[in-house]
Image (cartoon, rainbow, N blue to C red):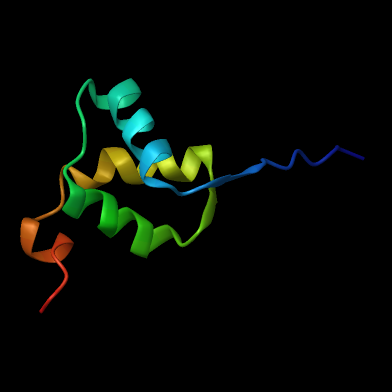
Length: 69
């Protein structure tokens, strides 16, 4: 029977998102992008989920990232 590997949840904090962005993109995220990822993922996510969202947020149209007033 194969063993299931469970990934550890990481806090979806501004600091963790900015560190991931620098590691993956070589640059920082703007605050609107950080807020969008936090709204999308919630308070905890796996590092893989964080990485996918950090990369994806750069290809999204700005109108879908900005929260309506």
